[in-house]
Image 1 (cartoon, rainbow, N blue to C red):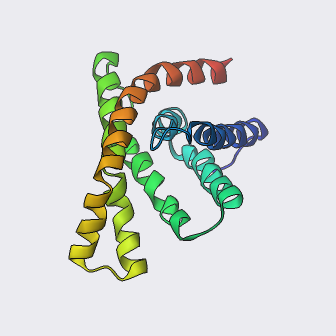
Image 2: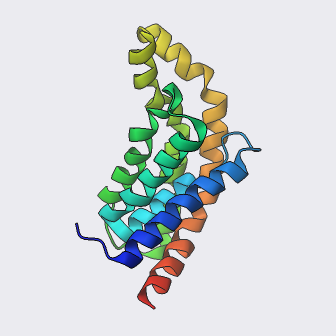
Length: 168
C-alpha cells in the first residue's frame, strides 16, 4: 500500500481530529464521535482507514498513558472497521443511513463485552467474574450505544462531503 503525501497529511489530520473530538467530548460520559468517524473513514478509504484509526489510538497512548486500559484500543476499534468492511460498498441511501447508525450503536452497546476478554485474561477473571464485569458496565454501554445511534446518522452526509472534498 503506497501512500501519497496528501494521504499521509490527511490521515494524520483525521487521526488528530478523532483524538481532539474525544478530548472535547470527555465531559459527557461515553458519548463521543469515534464510531461515526471510524465508519465514515472506512467507507471512504477502505483499508487505508486503519491509518487514522491507529494514529488516534497511539495519540491516546501518548497523551493519556500506555497503560492497561489502552491495550484493548489496539483491537476494539478494528472490530468496527472490520464490520464496516464487510458491508456492501454501495447501498441505497435509504438503507445505508439506518444500517450505519445501527452498526455504530451496536459497537457502543457491545463495547464492554468487546473489552471484557482482555480484562479477563489480564486480571485472571473466571467466567463469572467476566460476566459480572460486563454487567457492571451495562449502564455505560447503554449510554454509549444510544449516543452512537444518533451520532451514526451523520455518517452518510460526512462520507459524501469527504468524498467530494477528496475528488476536488
